Length: 438
Image (cartoon, rainbow, N blue to C red; front, side, top):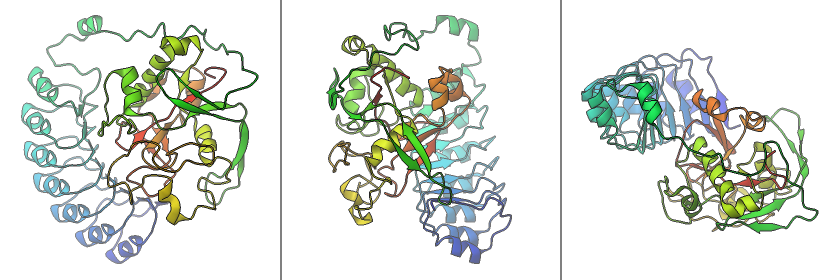
């Protein structure tokens, strides 16, 4: 399997940890531990997986932190810590992974903030901090992380607010205002995005389904899409569960490649990606950004005239297109050693995304369905989207989304991951229903 849940463990010695480190999976959950010693941490650091959950830890000393910093994975979750000292922060800052989750920290000293600012990863989560002073802000604004998450700050001074706004990589709450600003006045003066003219198609109205669908279409900004026929496939929720038949009742079009930086820029005007070359896939995009992109693309004159309403795929649509007639995500004719011919993964990507469409296509002519960037899918919130529930409410409540297909830092065996914010590992491809949005 890919995930091992040992959350019931209350104690762990170094011998057991050494055996666990031999497990070849991706996610190891041992969040029932409230304390570990350096010898145990040393053994766990030998594990080769991607996500290590130690969120039950309530204390952490610098020796344990130094051992954990040697772990070669991607996501380290130690969000059970309410505070850390500067020595622990200094050791953690040496870790080479992608996401450091310290979202349990309720207070942060200036020396600890200074040490964490030296961390060079992708995402540093400090989402339990409700308030910080100028001294801490002065350190965090220097953060080397690609993204610093402070989305639950409640109150800051005007000076602290100005300091934090100097670093565009720091994510602040959308409604955060300096203490001297009147919220009602600010709301009245703020600009709103006008999407009232996004489409002329009335809500819940389906456009007539053409008798003969073209095999491919190219839209007004050059996005090529392939028609996927209706059909069905068997899906197994877990290794030991029974197959369940999933039916795709209507044909749909899906992007032949992931949406590129150039295609994003043509609609949105600027590119948020870590790697900004035109033909690389766009990444570092949030769910609400993708929804806005789809609305604006659908509102372009030629797209409106054609009655096209864009979205991103459901989990079932993505899975069906990826399999391309195969009973599994990877056809049995493709040996594991051949998977690099079809996608960019951790062992062949050189630590970055690549221009789309360079690898071999699947049997239905779709590129990069596996690897390069994982791709947003609308489950687990797809039912809400289809029922016209306010997606923004789900976003604000912290709902996670699913991203499928593996990416440039993952193993080729990774099917997907759950995400709650933008990431350099995650992009998307478009879907278009011939009958409009369902």
